[in-house]
Amino acid sequence: MIKERAFQHYTWVELVTPNPEEVTTVVAKYHFPTKFKNYLLDRHEQPRAAADMVAHCALLVLRVVSGPNNQQQRTSPLCLAFNDQVLVTVSHVRNQRWMFAHMPVNPTGQVSEPILRIINRVLQPYFSALDDIIARTDRLSNQQLNYRITNRRLDRLSLLRTRLIYLRAATGSNLVAMQELQGILRQFFGTQPERTQQISQQLADTLVEFKQCQAMFDVVSDELSETAESFGNLLNNRLNDTMMFLTVWSLVLAIPPIVSGFYGMNTYLPLANRHLAWVDTILLTGALILLMVILYFVHTHRRK
Image (cartoon, rainbow, N blue to C red; front, side, top):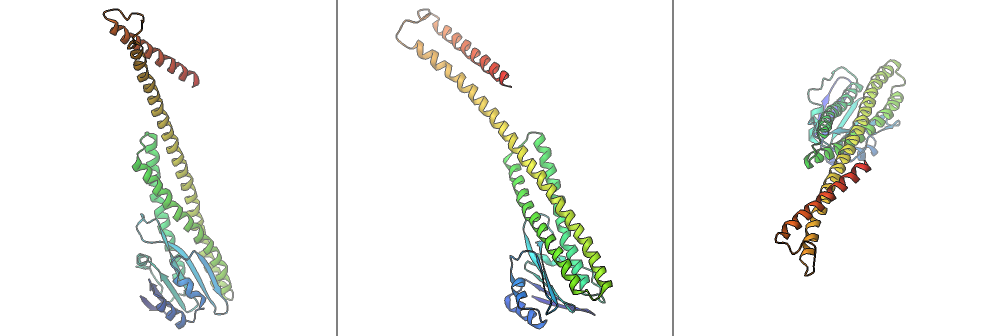
């Protein structure tokens, strides 16, 4: 789908899930380099910034959260191809249209204004997802303090770590692309010092936000790693306690067959001729079990 909006100084062409014919038409109509076509069509394109100084146009690819819902784990590319008169945006996911909905656009502004607004909107869902991950991580950390670890909570932890991997990688790649774009725009508007200074300042502020987002993702990643390690240690301790319990009971249950086996033989044994000899075997079994338990806990206490 192609949607065109004409303003005083530029035209905004919006493509949503375009087919190759639509991209070819837009590239040819607005005289963009042919090499831009592959970038615009690639649904798996990684963040980058490129320029063609001969055609005096540039390209920016950013990874964007697929929708406003914070539960989204994956990201998809958003492509911006532009020159002084045209801005082309290509979205490969229909949910990305929320980025442009109700976005204020100055009808008398320059093409750089919507580009900077779009970049700022790209960053907002990352902070929202970051807040959501922090809240969920805190809940998991509180649950581990209560020694309540279930398969469901382990699944949640795994999903959080997977989600964080995608978002953290996308944020870092977007930051690199933004730094490349900063140098490209200086070349584009080098002959307009005032405009160059204004755009550079706005981009610098946006870069600070991207770096802050990346730093927070690093902190949350470390926190999740520590939480996962703590979960692992608690599970190991729980397993050790279970194995200790099973060891004690296996030793306890091994004693009665030994005693009863001896007194089941056709040989002379002490106390075997008494009328209540079976009571003696029970008392002997209990005494041996008690002695084994005492020796086990004494040995365990010495090891600690």
